[in-house]
Structures are given as structure tokens and as C-alpha cells.
Amino acid sequence: MRNPTVLLVDDDRDFADMIADALAHHGYVANACYSGEACLSRLTPETEIVVADISMGAGMSGVELCRRIREQGSHVLVIMITASIEESDAIEAMRAGAWDYLRKPVGPTEIALAIAHGREHLQILRALRRLDEVPAPVRDGIVGSSDAVARVHDLIDRVGPSEATVLVTGESGTGKELVAKALHARWRPDAPFVAINCSAVAPELLESELFGHAQGAFTDAKSAREGLFAAAGKGTIFLDEIGDMAPLMQAKLLRALQERRVRQVGGTAETPIQARIIAATNRDLRADIAHGQFREDLFYRLDVVRIAVPPLRDRREDILGIAHWFLLAAAARTQRPVTRISSWAARKLLAYDWPGNVRELENCMERAVALCRLDEITVADLPARLLDATSETAIGGEDSPRTLDEMVVRHVQQVLARTGGNKTRAAGILGIDRRSIYRILERHGASAT
Image (cartoon, rainbow, N blue to C red; front, side, top):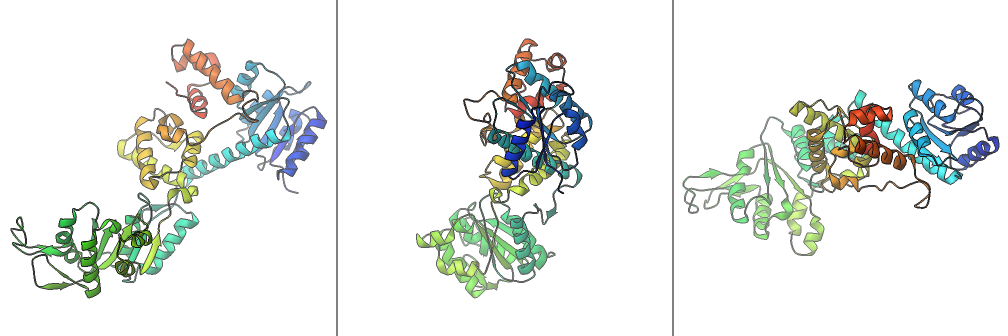
């Protein structure tokens, strides 16, 4: 038999059995226990969630059960249920280490939702623990092990050793140049890798940059200069943001690729192209062709093999690994003692859509490391735009009783106000450590200042 993942603990046997049966219909493996002692005896490594009544008559209370589970070093999350409306009960549950706090009357749907949230949190905690033990894999400078990244690596491995022209597509910040460098490393790693951003060079200068110019070709051409195609030799030339190239320059590039020869601006001699061509764009070139903004014949010259780099939102399973990698890199570079990401900050990272992709995530982690006061990144260290990525609401809707989050945060903020913001004194009054204050406040998106 499969061990239970959820234990329901209540001295009201009918209620415990009813909830356990209902959870089974939600897909959970759930068993009912009728005392704290019975629950402790049935805890297994597979147990994920304990839902316990805070007051169970004779014997161990729900708070004591929660405390005993914590003392065992277990990663089980405990959800408290009570008929009480006293804030002191919520504070006591928090001190014991409860994950959530629900008030009766509560039904199977509300409990199932609380359990679902708890299990999501457990998955994040496990992912963070794995990263502490074994950081995310990095290959060709690309961090991650998702299926989407595996497909990119597969294409790099297959086309890399050939001289085929490659078009790398993807949104800004996804790592298109890393793909180009990986292709070059499998082609001729000892030869030059020459990159140019076509959108960063004025249209009237791009031809000279690519093809070179003869002495006297224009006013400032006091001497001849070789272009990037010549500088690349038998290596790779990477034409980044090719979709932003002006139409006239597109025609000249097309001719060069067709003839495999370039002619310097103001010159007559032609030089053969020996370099491999890799182009990249964040634009939809087919849409640009339809609107007359990009040459169709040039597109087919470039689109021999296409590698589409996925946006970060399409490989969310890689987000924490990438964030952890950037965290360690920024901490080492700045000599800050930051080593991990809190579970609540991780939730925000996972919920955000990352329109700037990996580049935006790198910027976010560098900022967080610079602002971090502890040895872990918290919600307070993240940019404000990430804080609105999710909306934490009370279970059961707007009319439901306050959750443990809301009750505890309000109490902590009141104590902090009484101590003038002195967290050490507030922690002493609350009976918790100073770090716990930061964690309580960040869970609700509140500031610790």
C-alpha cells in the first residue's frame, strides 16, 4: 500500500473521516487520525501535509503536535483548524511553525485548496534544497535542464560541426549569442568569432563595417580598412538583430552571400567569404516580409537551419536554477555572503512572466544581492514589478476569516511599531528569532523596515 501524503487529525472522528474521504476524491492519499499521538506514529517520509485541529480535548493539542513535528526536523507542513476567533491562537500556531490557519466552519474544498498551496510550496522548497546540493547544469553558458533547452542543445550538436548557415530566433534577452558561440565552438573554435549588432550601427556605416573600405572611399577614410567578413577569416561572423538591417543593406548582403564574395566600399577587388554565417533576430521575419520590411530572398539565404531559443516563461522549470546561478555569480563578484533564495521570493520569481527573459532575471538577481541584508534573498529584495505577479488571497474568498498570514503579519507589525522598528526587541516580545520576522513579513509581501 502507498503511504499517505496527507494526515487529517481531529478528535471529531466523523469530521476527520469525512474530510479524508473528500480529499480522496480530490486525488490525494489521505488518512484520518484521531489524536496527536496517533498522527506522530503514522508520519512517514512520504507524508507531506498534516491538517490538525488546534484543540483536541484530552491528550496532545494541535499546537503541541505541530511543535513536535518541527522538533523532528520534518519538512511536513502543518495546517491548523480551529473554531476560535482569538488572534492569540494564530500567534501560537505561528510560533509552533504552522503553515496555515483555517477557521471553522471549513469544508473539504477550502482544506483541499490550502493543501494544494502547501504542496506547491513544498515543491519549491525541494527545488531550492536540490540547488543547494547540486546547482543547475550549465552547458555552453546556457543554464537549465528543461525539455526546451534540451532541444536547443540537440540542434547545436547536430548542426554545429557543419558549415550550414543558421538563423537563431528568440525574444530579446533569451541568449541567442550564447547559441551562436556554441555553434562556433563546434565548428572552428580556434578561428575568430566576430559579432556585430546590426541595429547598433548607423545604416550608412554598416556596409563599411561588414565589407571594409578603400583609402579615400569617403571623407574620413584616410586609410584602407578590412571589414568584419575579412576579419572573421575561416571562423564565424554573427549578424545579430538582422531584422533591423536597412533594405538597401539587405540587398548588398544578399549579393555577398550569393556570390560568397565581398567588395570594399570604394574598392574594385573582391575577397572571398570564408566565414560561416550565423544571424539572429527577435523579430518575426515572415511578418516583416509580408509588410515589405525584409527581403524574402535574403530570408531563405539565412534560414537554412533555424534554432528557436525559448522565452523564459516557456521554461519555468529552469527559472530557479538560473536565478541561483546568477545569485552565486553576483555574490562571488561582490564578495557578499548571500547563498540562497527564500521560498517566498522563489514563488515570486516563478510567478513573473519575465518579458526581458534571462537578461532581466540576471539584472534582478544582481539587484537582490546588492540589497540583501541576510544570507538569503527575500521578497523585500526583489523589484516592485515582481511583487504584483501573484495575488495572495484568503482561502474561501473575500468574506472568509483572516488567514494565519494576515493575523500574524498584523500582530508582528504592531509589535514592531511599539518597539520603534527594533527587530531584536520585537523578536524577544514575540518569542521568535529575528530572522523569523523577516520571513513572516516577506510571506505577506510586507517590508521589514
